[in-house]
Length: 337
Ligand code: PEP
Ligand code: MN
Image (tube, rainbow, N blue to C red; front, side, top):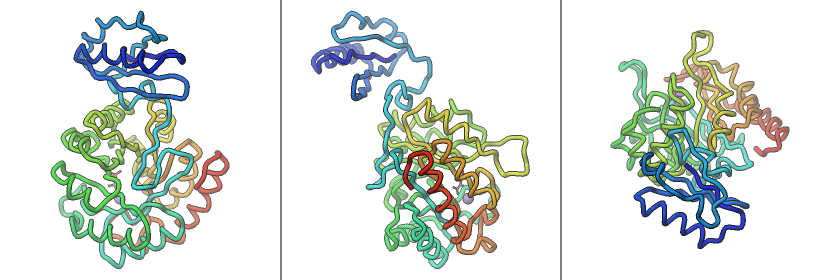
């Protein structure tokens, strides 16, 4: 349930409503908008049902919320949330691009990738140090050595780091080297990992699961937020469908759905979303046109010899074109890149 306060409600009236809710053992979430304050109630449904609040001074109305996710919901927080990632803001007017190789392979590969993506305007360096591979015989990542290289390359070229975490026991380790912790599609509903990230002070990039519905995805974000970490960014990376021509089906309608249902930012990963390098530029343009707050794109200095995901990796030259083309779309929809 949410309580919508009257525009004229005083701070005292807001506090009285909040105290009344909390004295029943329930939690509150306050969203202070330009005109009205909204008080969200979280906790036992039966307790919420017995609350009598409409008669209190300053209360405009109470609205019943049927969805299980609360903190993630736009009902609880009508204004867009802007996530501050060590100075880079995601969810505001500016489109933020993250780029780099699928996996960190070597210092030479990563530094070449970092230099080129920075030159084209990316703000984040991406790269996996822990790779969740379908086959146990495939390259599993350089682990902490990979994290160290990411930090070193990002610092050298004035970039931030986004990298995947696959184990709930690695939060401290990954936090030490990165600015955003990425939850991959295969761990999208790993609730132990999501709970551990709820305790992190770093923003989380939450990818959509392989066959995850929008409601399941929103609830996964609720796991993180309810643990205390409000800095969650969604990432649409394609879902499993009957189609085999593309690696996944990039569901751009999910961008609009997330924007309607949640106040959190959403970015698009056209690389895993299609699996084909020739589709990355058009799908990046489409993602921005659909309202995405950013992109995460795989770029490799030599895709033909990449240890993973070469077929969907852009060369630095193609990535420069992607940035130019995306900038035009961003401007057309009133945003900056
Ligand atoms: C990745 O970003 O390298 C990755 C493994 O992506 P996803 O989890 O979306 O498959
Ligand atoms: Mn990849």
